[in-house]
Length: 254
Image (tube, rainbow, N blue to C red):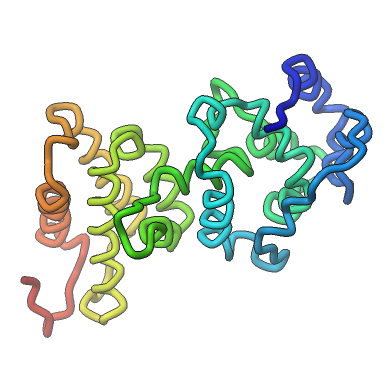
């Protein structure tokens, strides 16, 4: 596996303000700087659509994670590893998935091409493909990426789930949460729900807080998947009682 040297990585960060136009070039500028004679354009392995950059996120996570599934956690936590990918072999993908908003958009570059103490690696344009796959992958299922697809029905949902510590660090809590959210999705598709009063602010965020608070007094790993789902569903039932989730009058919740 290739990595950027630490000195090169720090120099790139230090020069970012002056180099911003280089991040709009069709070809990766680091190829010349690193005197790379030949490199593989791994972007060609992913689905790319400029008109809707996030459309194939779930599919690309699966493709990427399957290819790099066996890399060690230590390497997957290395900024120099992911920054090499974002600056060289996945340059075309980065240009399409994370285009700069304007000629002064240094924040996007810092968030998507680098990460550090104040920028979570889940925001990195390439690292996120592996980490979302790693955390939602379940090899015991017929479709190991079932939970990846559930999470990425909504980008904000996926981000909140993964960035909530007591969920992302615990697959029992994560999978149970996704099972409950899938139930909500199915209720909506089936026409059972009249309205959800602000899903993000009144359902998803409070649900994350609930799971964090539960994780503060008990260990999710001690619960079976069924017990974990039941505990999370109890929170959903409270939202129903509070009329945050409103069912059609013809529907009876069992």
